[in-house]
Amino acid sequence: MFQSHHPDVEIPNLSIFDYLFGSLKPEELDRIALINPATGAETTYGTLRDQIEAVAGALAAQGVGPGSVVGLLSPNIPEFATVFHGALRAGATVTTLNALYTPAEIEKQLLDAKATWLFTVSPLLPQAQAGAEAAGIPTDRLVVLDGAEGHPNLRDLLTAGEPAPDLTIDPQTTVAVLPYSSGTTGIPKGVMLTHRNLVANVEQSRHVMDLNGDDRVLAVLPFFHIYGMTVLLNIALFTRASLVTMPKFDLVQFLENIQRFECTYVFVAPPIMVALAKHPIVDKYDISSVRTLFSGAAPLDGATAERAAARLGTKVLQGYGMSELSPVSHLIPAERTDIPRSSIGLSIPNVVCKLVDTETGEELTEYGEDGLTKPGELWVKGPNVMVGYLGKPEATAESITEDGFLRTGDIAVRSKDDWYAIVDRAKELIKYKGYQVAPAELEALLLTHPEIADAAVIGVTVEDGEEVPKAFVVRAEGSALAESDVMEFVTERVAPYKKVRRVEFIDTVPKSSAGKILRKDLRERERSLAG
View: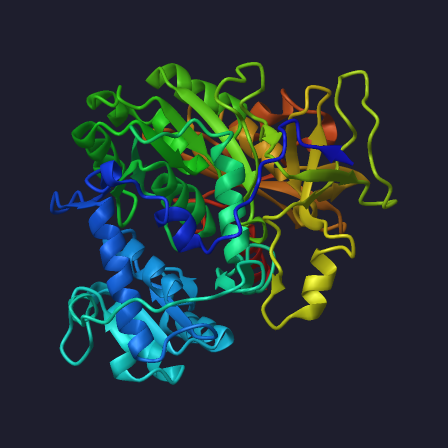
């Protein structure tokens, strides 16, 4: 086992509301918590806390409390924070839904989570209404935050005049949120995270991150995803930073917001980092206010990180986590300039890790001549590990060992200097002639080509039954790159068994809202073409 390089921290035994807002000092009440770029409206910490209490009171008066589950289907807007924390303050569990979901996907999650309320916004009302109706949620419990005829709205809740309830819950056992795992390698499952899980992960992470109350954080990564929920929303609120919300990613709007609001700390997924490193339009904006770019949600290759850092003159850091870890387990501390940017950094406080050989089940603890362990599946234990998958005890038992380690499914190595690097997903490794080929490694290499804007790699089965790497490539604007050019580029830079043996040019690489490559979509594409 590998203990964290950092000393343990004490985890307060509090609800997430009491942890974030119970410590508000009088001088912090007028600090700006949230900024809406569309209107310029600013919400102070004092106002936000009062709004949360008002929503909690209105919901409690209508029977929402411990044991209730409410759905939240919304893009990043300031009101998300009010409703999300208002429902938690009332004692309810919040299940956040992907804002891109279809009615059928909304219905499925609402039914699985046993949600009895749904909060949404008017642009998403058609699919929200269809999904809610199919899930048995009545019209008077479908709240449209910005208003729609026949539905309650946020103003109704804020002006109900009901006091927030006296709430006594056990933070260790009360499920606060039910995000659903991305489904990139399987069927989405409800991840049960308690108040303690959320509090622990903020407390663990804030001691390592360099975020502070003077920062302006651009919040473009979705709050409905656990990365946005914990790292952007909750950590920023705890540190009393200001959040500039963006409902969706648009590169021009993204750059304009950084310039206009002088954002200092920007959380991104790798696709945004690629754009910052390569897109010519970036040079048209003054984004010199940014002091830190922090990447997560999917592997970031070192070359892209260094290129972005050099181009923007800023720090680029990377972290690692998953929904089941609330989500952070590793990150690069800002002061550790010796750690490769392609790594996920050090394990955070209170976290213990194992690396386990996927073939033998043996724990890997020895270092090679290169100062690294052999690759093994990363197992993580700590107060941020979920309590389980909703209604799926078998899946929970497969994921969490009897002694509390979460099997991440990711293959990692550890260095003598305590940092870790992800090699790839265990389930996505390509087996070519007995060798293991990591798609992420080839993707990182392809992104170094000046004429490749984006890329994804999967294993495909060829005529002789062998699995070979296939690259899906998005050409840079104006490029006439040929398949043979791509294959030659890779062949010159990797061992023979890692060569890309199939290439297909596509317009966009399919990705989840959190920035993960949806390789299952590419595999389905392959099957449909083969059929």
